Amino acid sequence: MQKLLITRRLPDRVLDAARARFDITLRDRTDALSAEELRAALRDYDAVLPTLGDRFQADVFADVPAPRARILANFGVGYNHIDAEAAKAAGIPVTNTPGAVTDATADIALSLILMTARRLGEGERVLRAGKWEGWGPVQMLGTHVTGKRLGVIGMGRIGKAIAKRCHYGFDMEVVFYNRSKVEDPGMPARQVEMAEALAADFVVVAVPGGKATHHLIDAAALSQMKPSGIFVNISRGDVVEESALVAALQEGRIAGAGLDVYEFEPKVPSELMALENVTLLPHLGTACLEVRENMGMMAVANLIAHLDGQPLPNQVNP
Image 1 (cartoon, rainbow, N blue to C red):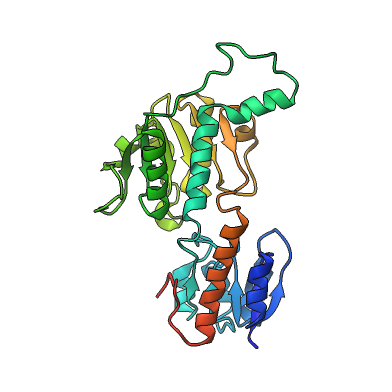
Image 2: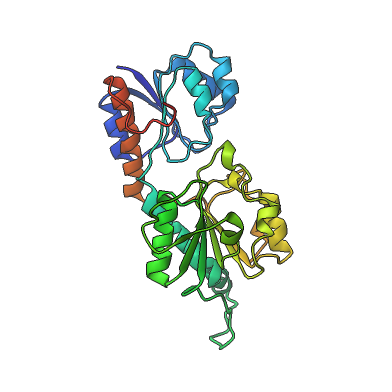
């Protein structure tokens, strides 16, 4: 049996499926692979099932010029932690798990919109602290969501799912920015330049991570939002220049933010945690058992296809 390294604990159903075809080593920890573990993974295993934070960058491949590993089957749709081109140069295909995460991630985007606009996290903190003094007509007034304008940055599967929920569920007008022309957004929506999308009432970032989108949302981009605008990020943390976002929030240049990802996660800036107009989630975008099972089974399917010499269903660096 080929040796497979799984870098974090996965649902039991996924582990059982992997054990049926591979001699697995389960690294039962929550932290990402260390520098030495990254190199050992390429050197000592036939296949690796990595996930967020396992930084297989160019220097790792350079240090293992003749890797034993012949596939990296990433658990997750985002793979910006893996240098896919460097992997390709080393003869290692990289796969991901698209589709399985779409609805769950879109649901989290809606949660962040509602929580931030209606001050739900702040309200719960007030109640739990015993500071609620009773209902009042001007108590914790937030921002109405229904009928407002949504700006989506990145109109892929997840962007479309978010837009659909907002339009059909909350009668929101949808505008979106996408680098390429989107012929059919799947619902009433208008493709616009990025500046116009950023000027919406609610701005949701749903682009893939990677070099092309690193700090796509910087100080200049945030300056195009309006003071009443609410910013939501469910993509990758380093798509946003976090220090610029902190400054915009502290200075009142935007009204609030809802974040599920962070530039240097799991580190979250204390400045963000000190702000009441920010909703902070610990990367819960796909945190449903059935979704994580589907992601894992997709990763295992890629591994089995490689083992059997079949085309890889979800290769990202052909």
